[in-house]
Image (cartoon, rainbow, N blue to C red; front, side, top):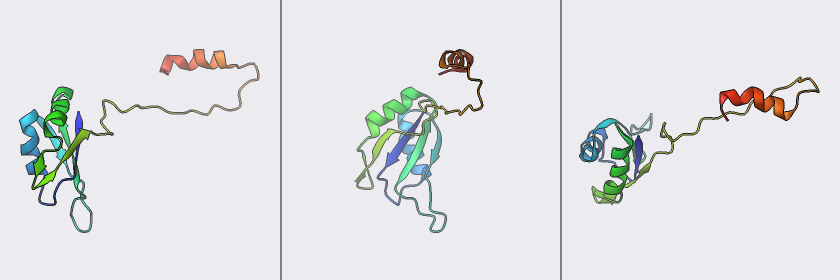
Length: 113
């Protein structure tokens, strides 16, 4: 259950986000991606909660709250593991001419669609 926090000031670090978002529920992890050369962040971070409910609550409560004079933007992280759809396309070649779509469906539907 991960939320994205954007438009964060350069003064903000992982500890500040942890303390701020702990008010919404138990925080598991805070990550602010940093530039490898300058070590500065690019104004966003990710906060992982123990539960979806706490993550959703943090979006309602923290979105547009001012931190160092800048309103932070909080929403669901697009890479949230629970909501990310995992799928793949598989190419199957060299099939017998008698193999039709129905047979392929029956064969592969056991693995999920």
